[in-house]
Image (cartoon, rainbow, N blue to C red; front, side, top):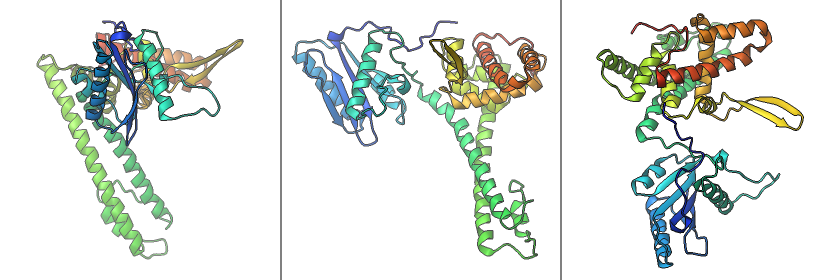
Length: 393
Protein backbone atom coordinates (compact mmCIF):
# COMPACT_ATOMS: atom_id res chain seq x y z
CA UNK A 1 0.00 0.00 0.00
CA UNK A 2 1.30 3.43 -0.95
CA UNK A 3 2.56 5.66 1.83
CA UNK A 4 -0.02 8.29 2.79
CA UNK A 5 1.04 11.70 4.03
CA UNK A 6 -0.06 12.23 7.63
CA UNK A 7 -0.37 16.03 7.13
CA UNK A 8 1.81 16.72 10.17
CA UNK A 9 4.29 18.70 8.06
CA UNK A 10 4.41 20.46 4.71
CA UNK A 11 6.18 18.66 1.90
CA UNK A 12 6.60 21.86 -0.15
CA UNK A 13 9.63 24.06 0.52
CA UNK A 14 8.69 27.50 1.84
CA UNK A 15 10.02 30.56 0.05
CA UNK A 16 8.76 33.27 2.37
CA UNK A 17 9.77 36.09 0.02
CA UNK A 18 7.27 34.90 -2.59
CA UNK A 19 4.54 33.45 -0.36
CA UNK A 20 1.56 35.36 0.98
CA UNK A 21 0.50 33.69 4.24
CA UNK A 22 -2.85 34.31 5.94
CA UNK A 23 -4.80 32.78 8.82
CA UNK A 24 -8.50 33.22 9.62
CA UNK A 25 -10.21 33.28 13.00
CA UNK A 26 -13.74 32.36 11.98
CA UNK A 27 -16.73 33.60 13.96
CA UNK A 28 -20.47 33.54 13.45
CA UNK A 29 -20.81 37.24 12.52
CA UNK A 30 -17.30 38.16 11.37
CA UNK A 31 -13.93 36.75 10.32
CA UNK A 32 -10.60 38.14 11.52
CA UNK A 33 -7.87 37.69 8.89
CA UNK A 34 -4.19 38.07 9.77
CA UNK A 35 -1.56 38.19 7.06
CA UNK A 36 2.18 37.96 6.52
CA UNK A 37 2.85 39.94 3.33
CA UNK A 38 6.32 39.80 1.69
CA UNK A 39 7.93 43.22 1.44
CA UNK A 40 5.44 44.81 3.84
CA UNK A 41 6.84 45.57 7.27
CA UNK A 42 3.53 45.67 9.10
CA UNK A 43 1.52 42.52 9.70
CA UNK A 44 -1.99 43.38 8.46
CA UNK A 45 -5.07 42.40 10.43
CA UNK A 46 -8.52 42.83 8.90
CA UNK A 47 -12.01 42.10 10.21
CA UNK A 48 -14.39 41.22 7.38
CA UNK A 49 -17.87 39.91 6.77
CA UNK A 50 -18.12 36.09 6.87
CA UNK A 51 -18.19 35.88 3.07
CA UNK A 52 -15.64 34.26 0.73
CA UNK A 53 -15.86 37.20 -1.68
CA UNK A 54 -14.68 39.58 1.08
CA UNK A 55 -11.81 37.24 1.94
CA UNK A 56 -10.69 36.99 -1.69
CA UNK A 57 -10.74 40.80 -1.98
CA UNK A 58 -8.47 41.11 1.05
CA UNK A 59 -6.04 38.52 -0.31
CA UNK A 60 -5.92 40.26 -3.70
CA UNK A 61 -5.27 43.65 -2.05
CA UNK A 62 -2.44 42.23 0.04
CA UNK A 63 -1.00 40.61 -3.06
CA UNK A 64 -1.05 43.97 -4.86
CA UNK A 65 0.71 45.57 -1.87
CA UNK A 66 3.44 42.91 -2.05
CA UNK A 67 3.89 43.51 -5.78
CA UNK A 68 4.17 47.29 -5.24
CA UNK A 69 6.82 46.62 -2.59
CA UNK A 70 8.88 44.78 -5.20
CA UNK A 71 7.89 41.20 -4.43
CA UNK A 72 6.60 38.50 -6.76
CA UNK A 73 3.86 36.40 -5.16
CA UNK A 74 3.90 32.85 -6.51
CA UNK A 75 2.00 31.18 -3.68
CA UNK A 76 -0.90 32.13 -1.41
CA UNK A 77 -1.32 29.88 1.65
CA UNK A 78 -4.36 30.24 3.92
CA UNK A 79 -5.24 28.27 7.05
CA UNK A 80 -8.04 28.23 9.61
CA UNK A 81 -9.13 25.97 12.45
CA UNK A 82 -11.58 23.11 11.94
CA UNK A 83 -14.91 23.94 13.52
CA UNK A 84 -18.56 24.65 12.96
CA UNK A 85 -18.04 26.00 9.44
CA UNK A 86 -16.62 22.69 8.21
CA UNK A 87 -14.52 22.40 5.05
CA UNK A 88 -16.55 24.30 2.48
CA UNK A 89 -14.30 27.37 2.57
CA UNK A 90 -11.15 25.32 1.97
CA UNK A 91 -12.74 23.64 -1.06
CA UNK A 92 -13.84 27.01 -2.45
CA UNK A 93 -10.42 28.61 -1.96
CA UNK A 94 -8.69 25.72 -3.69
CA UNK A 95 -11.00 26.15 -6.67
CA UNK A 96 -9.90 29.81 -6.74
CA UNK A 97 -6.24 28.81 -6.88
CA UNK A 98 -5.50 29.50 -3.20
CA UNK A 99 -3.66 26.89 -1.14
CA UNK A 100 -6.03 26.25 1.78
CA UNK A 101 -5.44 24.13 4.89
CA UNK A 102 -7.59 23.23 7.90
CA UNK A 103 -5.77 22.99 11.26
CA UNK A 104 -6.75 20.59 14.02
CA UNK A 105 -7.59 22.92 16.95
CA UNK A 106 -6.11 20.56 19.55
CA UNK A 107 -2.74 20.56 17.79
CA UNK A 108 -2.16 24.31 18.30
CA UNK A 109 0.04 24.99 21.33
CA UNK A 110 -1.34 27.54 23.80
CA UNK A 111 -0.17 29.02 27.09
CA UNK A 112 -0.53 26.80 30.17
CA UNK A 113 -1.29 29.69 32.50
CA UNK A 114 -4.17 29.18 34.91
CA UNK A 115 -6.03 32.18 33.47
CA UNK A 116 -4.61 32.97 30.08
CA UNK A 117 -5.80 35.86 27.95
CA UNK A 118 -7.90 34.82 24.96
CA UNK A 119 -8.99 37.17 22.19
CA UNK A 120 -9.46 36.81 18.46
CA UNK A 121 -6.26 38.79 17.87
CA UNK A 122 -4.26 36.44 20.13
CA UNK A 123 -5.87 33.42 18.46
CA UNK A 124 -4.68 34.63 15.04
CA UNK A 125 -1.15 34.98 16.45
CA UNK A 126 -1.23 31.41 17.73
CA UNK A 127 -2.56 30.19 14.39
CA UNK A 128 0.07 32.12 12.45
CA UNK A 129 2.87 30.73 14.62
CA UNK A 130 1.61 27.16 14.17
CA UNK A 131 1.00 27.58 10.44
CA UNK A 132 4.46 29.06 9.82
CA UNK A 133 6.11 26.15 11.60
CA UNK A 134 4.07 23.70 9.52
CA UNK A 135 4.96 25.48 6.26
CA UNK A 136 8.66 25.36 7.17
CA UNK A 137 8.42 21.58 7.40
CA UNK A 138 8.87 21.28 11.16
CA UNK A 139 7.45 17.84 12.07
CA UNK A 140 4.61 17.67 14.60
CA UNK A 141 4.44 21.48 14.83
CA UNK A 142 0.71 21.27 14.17
CA UNK A 143 -1.64 18.83 12.47
CA UNK A 144 -3.73 19.49 9.39
CA UNK A 145 -7.11 17.86 8.82
CA UNK A 146 -7.63 15.83 5.66
CA UNK A 147 -9.97 17.73 3.36
CA UNK A 148 -12.97 15.50 2.50
CA UNK A 149 -14.79 15.83 -0.78
CA UNK A 150 -18.40 16.97 -0.88
CA UNK A 151 -19.47 13.40 -1.73
CA UNK A 152 -17.58 11.96 1.27
CA UNK A 153 -19.20 14.44 3.65
CA UNK A 154 -22.62 13.72 2.18
CA UNK A 155 -22.15 9.94 2.52
CA UNK A 156 -21.75 10.25 6.31
CA UNK A 157 -25.04 12.05 6.85
CA UNK A 158 -27.54 9.12 6.69
CA UNK A 159 -25.74 7.21 9.43
CA UNK A 160 -25.42 10.26 11.66
CA UNK A 161 -29.05 11.22 11.06
CA UNK A 162 -30.19 7.70 11.94
CA UNK A 163 -28.18 7.84 15.16
CA UNK A 164 -29.92 11.11 16.09
CA UNK A 165 -33.35 9.70 15.25
CA UNK A 166 -32.78 6.55 17.29
CA UNK A 167 -31.88 8.71 20.30
CA UNK A 168 -35.00 10.80 19.72
CA UNK A 169 -37.12 7.63 19.54
CA UNK A 170 -35.71 6.50 22.87
CA UNK A 171 -36.46 9.89 24.43
CA UNK A 172 -40.08 9.81 23.24
CA UNK A 173 -40.63 6.27 24.53
CA UNK A 174 -39.14 7.21 27.90
CA UNK A 175 -41.35 10.30 28.14
CA UNK A 176 -44.49 8.26 27.41
CA UNK A 177 -43.58 5.65 29.99
CA UNK A 178 -42.72 8.24 32.63
CA UNK A 179 -46.10 9.94 32.19
CA UNK A 180 -47.97 6.63 32.52
CA UNK A 181 -45.96 5.50 35.55
CA UNK A 182 -47.24 8.55 37.45
CA UNK A 183 -50.71 7.02 37.06
CA UNK A 184 -49.59 3.51 38.06
CA UNK A 185 -49.51 2.10 34.48
CA UNK A 186 -46.35 0.16 33.68
CA UNK A 187 -47.24 -2.38 30.99
CA UNK A 188 -47.87 -0.04 28.04
CA UNK A 189 -45.52 -0.53 25.06
CA UNK A 190 -45.39 2.56 22.79
CA UNK A 191 -43.56 0.77 19.95
CA UNK A 192 -46.42 -1.63 19.18
CA UNK A 193 -48.31 -1.03 15.94
CA UNK A 194 -51.66 -0.75 17.72
CA UNK A 195 -50.28 1.50 20.47
CA UNK A 196 -52.90 4.21 19.86
CA UNK A 197 -55.79 1.77 20.18
CA UNK A 198 -54.27 0.32 23.35
CA UNK A 199 -53.81 3.83 24.74
CA UNK A 200 -57.51 4.63 24.28
CA UNK A 201 -58.43 1.42 26.13
CA UNK A 202 -56.16 2.05 29.12
CA UNK A 203 -57.78 2.29 32.53
CA UNK A 204 -56.33 3.63 35.75
CA UNK A 205 -55.83 1.25 38.70
CA UNK A 206 -58.94 2.77 40.32
CA UNK A 207 -60.94 1.96 37.20
CA UNK A 208 -61.37 5.31 35.41
CA UNK A 209 -59.90 6.49 32.07
CA UNK A 210 -56.83 8.68 31.67
CA UNK A 211 -57.38 12.44 32.21
CA UNK A 212 -58.19 14.34 29.02
CA UNK A 213 -55.05 16.52 28.90
CA UNK A 214 -52.81 13.55 29.65
CA UNK A 215 -54.48 11.52 26.90
CA UNK A 216 -53.97 14.36 24.38
CA UNK A 217 -50.32 14.69 25.40
CA UNK A 218 -49.71 10.97 24.92
CA UNK A 219 -51.41 11.01 21.52
CA UNK A 220 -49.11 13.82 20.38
CA UNK A 221 -46.11 11.89 21.65
CA UNK A 222 -47.24 8.82 19.71
CA UNK A 223 -47.56 10.95 16.57
CA UNK A 224 -43.95 12.13 17.03
CA UNK A 225 -42.92 8.53 17.61
CA UNK A 226 -44.66 7.36 14.44
CA UNK A 227 -42.98 10.13 12.41
CA UNK A 228 -39.55 9.31 13.86
CA UNK A 229 -39.95 5.60 13.14
CA UNK A 230 -40.99 6.38 9.57
CA UNK A 231 -37.87 8.50 9.03
CA UNK A 232 -35.67 5.74 10.46
CA UNK A 233 -37.24 3.20 8.09
CA UNK A 234 -36.68 5.56 5.15
CA UNK A 235 -32.97 5.87 5.95
CA UNK A 236 -32.64 2.10 6.45
CA UNK A 237 -34.31 1.46 3.09
CA UNK A 238 -31.92 3.92 1.44
CA UNK A 239 -28.89 2.20 2.97
CA UNK A 240 -30.26 -1.26 2.08
CA UNK A 241 -30.48 -0.11 -1.54
CA UNK A 242 -26.84 0.99 -1.35
CA UNK A 243 -25.83 -2.44 -0.06
CA UNK A 244 -27.86 -4.18 -2.76
CA UNK A 245 -26.16 -2.06 -5.44
CA UNK A 246 -22.73 -2.99 -4.04
CA UNK A 247 -23.65 -6.70 -4.06
CA UNK A 248 -24.99 -6.50 -7.61
CA UNK A 249 -21.85 -4.77 -8.85
CA UNK A 250 -19.67 -7.44 -7.19
CA UNK A 251 -21.80 -10.24 -8.70
CA UNK A 252 -21.39 -8.76 -12.20
CA UNK A 253 -17.66 -8.44 -11.69
CA UNK A 254 -17.76 -4.68 -12.22
CA UNK A 255 -15.17 -2.35 -10.76
CA UNK A 256 -17.21 -0.31 -8.27
CA UNK A 257 -16.12 2.84 -6.45
CA UNK A 258 -13.85 2.45 -3.46
CA UNK A 259 -16.49 2.92 -0.73
CA UNK A 260 -18.90 0.45 -2.36
CA UNK A 261 -16.16 -2.18 -2.63
CA UNK A 262 -15.26 -1.71 1.06
CA UNK A 263 -18.92 -2.00 2.03
CA UNK A 264 -19.31 -5.26 0.12
CA UNK A 265 -16.21 -6.77 1.76
CA UNK A 266 -17.37 -5.82 5.26
CA UNK A 267 -20.94 -7.10 5.04
CA UNK A 268 -19.63 -10.55 4.07
CA UNK A 269 -18.15 -10.98 7.56
CA UNK A 270 -20.41 -12.95 9.90
CA UNK A 271 -21.49 -10.77 12.82
CA UNK A 272 -20.91 -7.49 11.02
CA UNK A 273 -24.31 -5.97 10.17
CA UNK A 274 -25.15 -3.38 7.53
CA UNK A 275 -25.27 -0.46 9.96
CA UNK A 276 -21.82 -1.29 11.36
CA UNK A 277 -20.39 -1.75 7.86
CA UNK A 278 -21.81 1.59 6.74
CA UNK A 279 -20.43 3.38 9.80
CA UNK A 280 -16.93 1.94 9.41
CA UNK A 281 -16.85 2.57 5.66
CA UNK A 282 -17.92 6.20 5.69
CA UNK A 283 -16.48 7.30 9.05
CA UNK A 284 -12.96 5.84 8.89
CA UNK A 285 -12.12 3.48 6.02
CA UNK A 286 -12.99 6.04 3.32
CA UNK A 287 -10.18 8.20 4.74
CA UNK A 288 -6.68 7.40 3.49
CA UNK A 289 -4.93 6.84 6.79
CA UNK A 290 -1.16 6.42 6.94
CA UNK A 291 -0.68 3.22 8.96
CA UNK A 292 -2.16 1.09 11.73
CA UNK A 293 -1.17 3.59 14.42
CA UNK A 294 -3.06 6.34 12.62
CA UNK A 295 -6.10 4.03 12.34
CA UNK A 296 -6.15 3.29 16.09
CA UNK A 297 -5.50 6.93 16.97
CA UNK A 298 -8.31 8.21 14.73
CA UNK A 299 -10.74 5.86 16.48
CA UNK A 300 -9.54 6.99 19.91
CA UNK A 301 -8.46 3.44 20.76
CA UNK A 302 -4.80 4.22 21.42
CA UNK A 303 -3.35 4.66 24.89
CA UNK A 304 -2.40 7.81 26.78
CA UNK A 305 0.85 7.09 28.67
CA UNK A 306 1.98 9.37 31.48
CA UNK A 307 5.72 9.20 32.04
CA UNK A 308 7.75 11.72 34.04
CA UNK A 309 10.87 10.86 35.98
CA UNK A 310 10.24 7.61 37.83
CA UNK A 311 6.49 7.80 37.27
CA UNK A 312 5.20 5.32 34.73
CA UNK A 313 1.46 4.86 34.32
CA UNK A 314 -1.20 4.51 31.66
CA UNK A 315 -4.14 6.93 31.80
CA UNK A 316 -6.39 4.82 29.59
CA UNK A 317 -7.81 5.64 26.18
CA UNK A 318 -6.88 8.93 24.57
CA UNK A 319 -10.52 9.35 23.40
CA UNK A 320 -9.37 12.03 20.99
CA UNK A 321 -10.71 10.36 17.86
CA UNK A 322 -14.06 9.60 16.28
CA UNK A 323 -16.58 8.71 19.00
CA UNK A 324 -18.92 6.93 16.56
CA UNK A 325 -16.14 4.61 15.38
CA UNK A 326 -15.01 3.90 18.94
CA UNK A 327 -18.50 2.97 20.17
CA UNK A 328 -19.11 0.90 17.04
CA UNK A 329 -15.87 -1.06 17.44
CA UNK A 330 -16.39 -1.79 21.16
CA UNK A 331 -19.86 -3.16 20.42
CA UNK A 332 -18.49 -5.16 17.48
CA UNK A 333 -15.71 -6.60 19.65
CA UNK A 334 -18.27 -8.03 22.10
CA UNK A 335 -20.25 -9.53 19.20
CA UNK A 336 -17.05 -10.92 17.74
CA UNK A 337 -16.41 -12.99 20.87
CA UNK A 338 -19.81 -14.69 20.38
CA UNK A 339 -20.12 -15.00 16.60
CA UNK A 340 -16.48 -15.49 15.55
CA UNK A 341 -15.22 -17.78 18.32
CA UNK A 342 -12.90 -19.68 15.98
CA UNK A 343 -11.06 -16.60 14.74
CA UNK A 344 -7.50 -15.90 15.90
CA UNK A 345 -8.54 -12.58 17.44
CA UNK A 346 -11.32 -14.17 19.52
CA UNK A 347 -8.97 -16.94 20.64
CA UNK A 348 -6.43 -14.29 21.67
CA UNK A 349 -9.11 -12.63 23.81
CA UNK A 350 -10.28 -15.89 25.41
CA UNK A 351 -6.72 -16.92 26.31
CA UNK A 352 -5.95 -13.66 28.09
CA UNK A 353 -9.39 -13.24 29.65
CA UNK A 354 -9.09 -16.68 31.26
CA UNK A 355 -5.80 -15.67 32.89
CA UNK A 356 -7.05 -12.24 34.03
CA UNK A 357 -10.78 -12.41 34.73
CA UNK A 358 -10.89 -8.91 36.22
CA UNK A 359 -9.51 -7.26 33.05
CA UNK A 360 -12.24 -8.21 30.58
CA UNK A 361 -13.20 -4.59 29.86
CA UNK A 362 -9.57 -3.63 29.30
CA UNK A 363 -9.04 -6.63 27.05
CA UNK A 364 -12.17 -5.87 25.01
CA UNK A 365 -10.71 -2.44 24.21
CA UNK A 366 -7.50 -4.13 23.08
CA UNK A 367 -9.56 -6.55 20.97
CA UNK A 368 -11.49 -3.62 19.44
CA UNK A 369 -8.20 -1.97 18.45
CA UNK A 370 -6.78 -5.17 16.96
CA UNK A 371 -10.04 -5.87 15.14
CA UNK A 372 -10.21 -2.38 13.66
CA UNK A 373 -6.67 -2.64 12.32
CA UNK A 374 -7.41 -6.12 10.92
CA UNK A 375 -10.55 -4.85 9.15
CA UNK A 376 -8.61 -1.88 7.77
CA UNK A 377 -6.02 -4.23 6.29
CA UNK A 378 -8.84 -6.37 4.93
CA UNK A 379 -10.53 -3.55 3.00
CA UNK A 380 -7.26 -1.94 1.89
CA UNK A 381 -5.17 -5.01 1.02
CA UNK A 382 -7.70 -7.83 0.85
CA UNK A 383 -6.02 -9.71 3.74
CA UNK A 384 -8.80 -11.54 5.61
CA UNK A 385 -8.21 -11.85 9.39
CA UNK A 386 -7.20 -15.39 10.30
CA UNK A 387 -10.12 -17.72 11.07
CA UNK A 388 -12.86 -15.18 10.32
CA UNK A 389 -16.00 -16.75 8.85
CA UNK A 390 -17.64 -15.18 5.80
CA UNK A 391 -21.19 -15.23 4.51
CA UNK A 392 -21.86 -16.71 1.11
CA UNK A 393 -21.05 -14.31 -1.72
